[in-house]
Image (cartoon, rainbow, N blue to C red; front, side, top):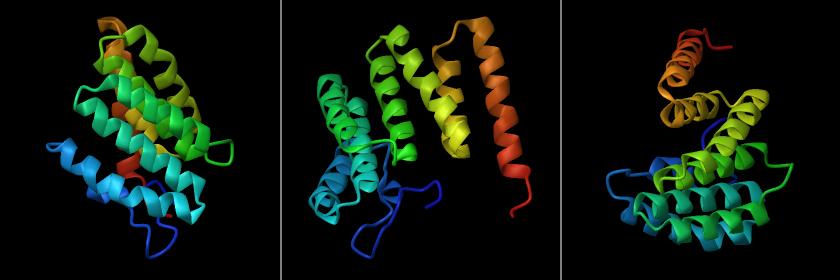
Amino acid sequence: MGEDAPATDAELPAFDKLWNFQKPDETEKRFRELLPRAKASGDKDYHGQLLTQIARTRGLQRDFDDAHKILDEAKAVLDHTCPLGQVRLWLERGRAFNSSGKKDKAYPFFLRAFVQANRGGFDVYTVDAVHMLAIIAEPDDAVQWNELAIDLACLLYTSPSP
């Protein structure tokens, strides 16, 4: 499946490629257009991950209550058979808390995302989680988290491909 959003068939595109972070409202619209097909596919990992990204669009639009409601829906869809979906759920829950000024509530979600992403070999998401931990950390700890993120990114992008 890789680290990009899964594409189970021709009807389910890799939705990460549809992101426009400058226009989260437009991205939300594109993602919501995919939602009926995602539900109908029976692919709970794809469906759950798509929901996490819809929640992220809501957070970027500063509607944190809606973001959390959508993440609750994603949580109900995802289970232990969807490790990447769970990582993305924890990342987005942490982002929603952090962006709403609740760093203390964000921390356990970013830490859980980091551990699970690292354990699952989801390198891009491991670096993302470490980066988010650095953002919310106290200055002394932030330096260490940033150094780890840089080290991981260097390993990721300088290692020879298998």
